Length: 218
Length: 305
Ligand SMILES: Nc1ncnc2c1ncn2[C@@H]1O[C@H](COP(=O)(O)OP(=O)(O)OP(=O)(O)O)[C@@H](O)[C@H]1O
Ligand SMILES: [Mg+2]
Image 1 (cartoon, rainbow over the protein chains, first blue to last red):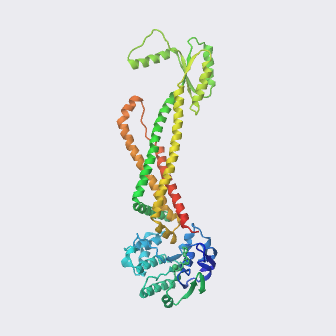
Image 2: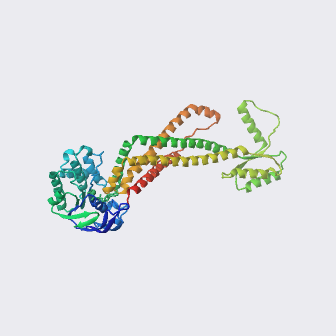
Image 3: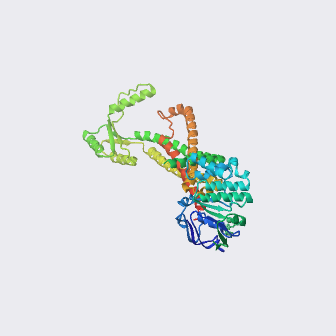
């Protein structure tokens, strides 16, 4: 499902952000991606959905050779991946509802389905009361939940989550984790990047540890 | 098919939102386009009207061959043969001394109200020769005139040579001038529109980036901007044509009567319909090209591969 072979990624000159990474994540698996700040967690996720190019190696996602994609067919990969960005990337001039609906508009769904699915996703993250608020009016945790709702609304087979509990207290973090576990039970492959030891302990899943761009344990 | 319409609809909604968010820039751009198209349109109007003059005058250009009074039938036959064998001649008309006098007297009477009676006929007989329309018709006329001039029995030849050739040169100049200004203005419009589109893109950078991140096709991202460019071209040209129309009808209602006294039967023309469509179409096309260029450049920057 997700495979990396000897991937090397450099930002400019200097030591590589990903240094000869090889990994295999099975279909339907739930894995934590952890490591200290700057280890390369975000970079791996970016490589997986084609936002950053890489210098060497091969990346296969859903049978797609990511390195071979170009601007014209990149969307085929990205439509099978839901991403929760470390900085959320919510549109500040759209309401919560519109933000979640937006992810479906770009894939040409009809309006009725969009409304229904958006409502369902917001219910899942407990944000229906805030559906008409704008992101700047929300707390960090609420914004994070909007980002999660947006990532899951298209029911993608793969979900990449970059620190989805970074801003949340223990109690809500646990709820969010349970949400991902539920998505996982429904068949989604989850890659969950976090540097919180608590979360790692709470979820009993495979852990991939990165350090300075290398896989330390997996 | 359905999804294509859907994409266009979403694109259109996004376009309207863009225009609202950048209303001022959009408006400035539209007005600039309108002014540019207006300049072009003005020249087109002048050009059309001059062309109308030229066409009606050109129709009247003919080679008149005046005959000596003592021309022999053989000499006449020789001349008529010359006319017939020249493939560029469209028609010949023989005007006898009597006819010429008759016509002259009629027009004279019309003008002054006086019947003229000299007791003899001072006018010569003549041939009026019309030539087929072609690019260097004037050259053929003058060549043929020279040939005829020295034939026996020919008194003199006449055609309005110098003013016509000058006028035709002027029309060539007009055509070149129109094309040059047209090209120059189009180029300027491309710069203006692409600049507006670029501003519109910058104000929506986050949204565009996100669209691509969540799996929008490049088309889906580009369509609203292409539509915005075309909309600018459309609004600009329609605005300018509307204004030109108003000015035209004002001038016409004010000056039509005095125009008619200068040139009888002259009707002041507006830009002809096909050219109206061409102006609007070209303006929309320019908008499309300009926005295509700037979206293309932006997408190149966004794609890190
Ligand atoms: N756009 C960029 N340009 C240059 N260097 C970058 C860029 N993004 C990341 N890096 C560098 O690559 C390395 C890995 O960064 P990355 O963001 O993947 O770390 P991370 O594990 O996600 O860290 P954190 O836990 O702080 O989010 C770091 O050294 C970082 O400075
Ligand atoms: Mg990170």
